[in-house]
Length: 361
Image 1 (spheres, rainbow, N blue to C red):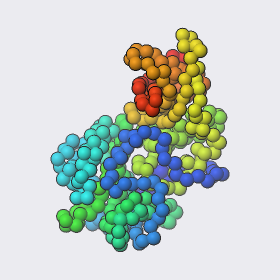
Image 2 (cartoon, rainbow, N blue to C red; image 1 turned 180 degrees about the vertical axis):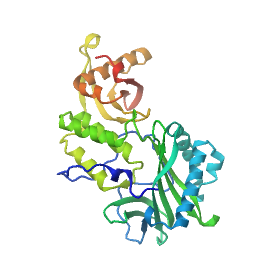
Image 3 (cartoon, rainbow, N blue to C red; image 1 turned 135 degrees about the vertical axis):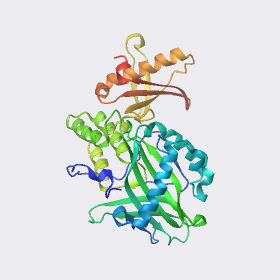
Image 4 (cartoon, one colour; image 1 turned 30 degrees about the vertical axis):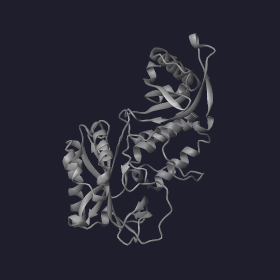
């Protein structure tokens, strides 16, 4: 295990001017595993009760060895698709969530393929003094007292927990694995699985540091929309779970806000067709980063015309994509592709993803 989270190992960023809190990523529930029985949250009121966090450097050797043994076994079960054994590692309090946890483990396979797990960070979270389940924040300060990471958990029962963050080195998608472990008093206080989270660590071979650096370069060129979504991509790749906050995450958020305008603030807006679609207009109601295909795609949602023929639906979606990119052609050079989601009367009627090169100009 390393001493400091990867987000803290970035090059120094010029001090921002604005202050801004943690922003949740504006994407669909994502491929990050949403199954954690303790309902993790990114921003909650700190509990007044006594809790404690120990960083990796402060762990006793016995705790370190026991955590790594449990974590390596779970990681092996995930990559080996040994779901019966994985189910046997669950804390009793989350056994009812097995279907969701299994789904997360299955979705992790393409992220971990070709790689080996390396545990980069670990935190021991002591909440044994809690009297009742409570929204709880752990402030994890490094040995030199220079960096504090905040871990925020919702409705946490009393007990000893650990958060382990790992990367699949050598995997093309550089998959990330986060585990919440807890001691099970019914099994001799063995470490058991309480939460499982996975998602990408790279898009198209580029990690979060690359996207952050790229976002800054785009901002300098006044390509605001491309910069905004590049910051979103950096945040997605650098923060493996939504319940962590750190000084560098706050820097990234503030730097993004320093762009002065968000594409989201432009919504809703209209785009107009060209060529055979000249005179047609569609309303764009949502924009976001969409990593559902493990790449740096963007996504738009538009109000469709109510078409039911698949060929006509596809033609309309492609026309909307082309019209949108005519308004912001710089996006073509900075992202892999674009999703178009048609909605009508509150119902999704069609969806398509195309690489930027395949969208007509």
